[in-house]
Length: 324
Image 1 (cartoon, rainbow, N blue to C red):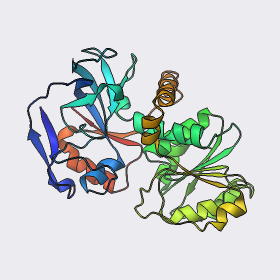
Image 2: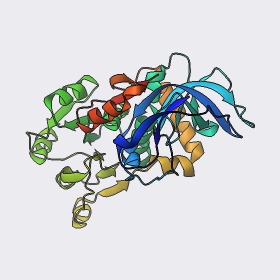
Image 3: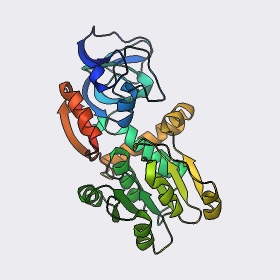
C-alpha cells in the first residue's frame, strides 16, 4: 500500500507519499481499500499540530473516507469482505488502504457512491446534531448559516430546508451565494460587501434569525449574535477563520438567547445509540434525495498537497475529495 505519511506535524510540506506494508486487521478492525477520501479543515490542523487530537507519530492524515472491505478482524460480524463502507476514524484516509475500527464504519446502501460517502459523515452528522439535537430547530423558524458555501455550511442549508426552516446563507462571494441558492437557501448575504447586521434586519423584518449556525468564528460572531432573535440559539460549530472570538456575556442575557456548543465527535462517543439512529435517518434522507454532498471537485490521491493549497485559498465550495 501507499499513503501520505506525516513524520513531523510541521505542515503539509512535511507529508511524503510512502510505500508501507499492507496491514492485517486486528480484533474489531477491518482493512478498507480506499476509493475516495475527503479533505476537511481538521485534516489541515492535524498536520500543523494545531488540532485537539494529536496522534502518535508517524501517522497518515485523512479523517474521512469510503471504500471496500478487503479483510475483517476477529469479532467483526456486521461487515463482510466486498462490502462498501464509509468511515470517519480521524486518521488513515489519505492512502490506498486503511485499518478502520469496524464500529466506526457505516455500511453503504446500494446506490451510495464512494465519492458522496467520503464527503458525507462529518458534515451531515455535525449539521444534523447541531440543528436537530442542540438547537431543536422547528419548521417555520429562520436559520442564519455562516460560511454557508463550505462543507458543513452546505449540509446545514439542506438539513434546515428538510426540516421546514427558512434559510439565510452568508458567504464571501457572489459565486458562493449563487451555490447556496441552488441548493435551497431562501436568501443570501455576501458579507464581503454587505453589512451583516443591516442585511439580517432587512431579511427578517427586524426580528433576527432564530438559530445561527457558525462554523467560522472570527469577526462575524459578535455582529451575528447581536442580530439574533429573542430566545435564539447560537451554535458554536468551529473556527475556520482562525481566531476564537469572545462574546460580551450581557448579549445572551439581553436576548434571552443561548450559546450552544456543538461537538459531534464527543456526542457520537458518549451517546452511540442516538448517533447510530441519526446516521440511519441521514442515510434515508440521502436515498430520498433530500440531501446530497456538494462536491467542489475530485482530485487524484497523489495530488494531495495541491488539494490542501486549494482548500487554503478559501475557494472551495462544498467538499474536496481525493480518489484512488
